[in-house]
Amino acid sequence: MKIMKIGTLFLLFFWQPVLAVVPIQLGEIEVKLDVTAQPRIEIEKPTGGWYHNIKLSHNPENIRLFQAEVPVRVKLRRQDGFKVSIKAPLILRQETKLAHSSQHLFSPAKISWGKDRANIKLLSATPEVFTVNNGTASLTSADYLLHISALAPSGQGTAGKYHGKLTLIFETNS
Image (cartoon, rainbow, N blue to C red):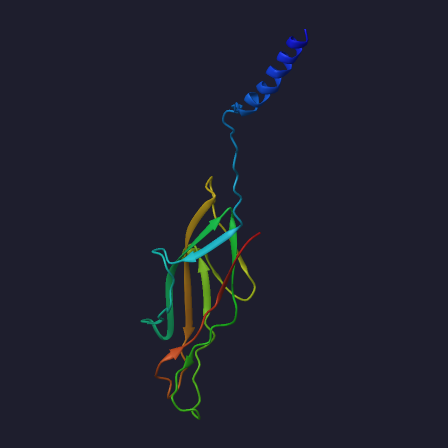
C-alpha cells in the first residue's frame, strides 16, 4: 500500500510540470478602436498651398478702385462651421526710398468673404460665422471667395508701388 501511495505521489509530482508546459488556447480577441480627432480647420487654395502675395488690379470703370478676388478652400474635421475675422485693418502704403518723404496711403481696404458674390460678408475684427453642410463625412470642404478692395489716394505723387499685410484669423465654432 505504501508503494502505491509513493507511486501515486511520484506520478502527481512529475505530472504537474507537464501540465504547466501545455499552452492554453484563448482564441482571437477583438478590440474595437475608436479614434477621436480634435476639431481641425485647414485653409488653402483650391489647388493646394497658399497665397504668398495677392495682386490688386484697378477697376476699368473706376481707376481709383483696386481690387482682387481669390478662391479659398476651407476644410473642416468634425465641425459644421467656422469664424473669420481680420487682425487689423489693411492699409496699403506707398513704398518710398526717401526717409523724409511722406507716404501716400490707400483708404482702409474692405475685406469680404463668402460662398459667392451674392452671399459675401464684410469682415472686421469681430468674427463672422459661416456654416457648412457636413453631410455624413467627418471631413468636409467648401470653397469661398476672398474679396479685397481699396481706393487709391488722389493728388500728385501718388504713382508708385504700394504694399500691405492682411492677417485673417480662422477659428472653428466649437
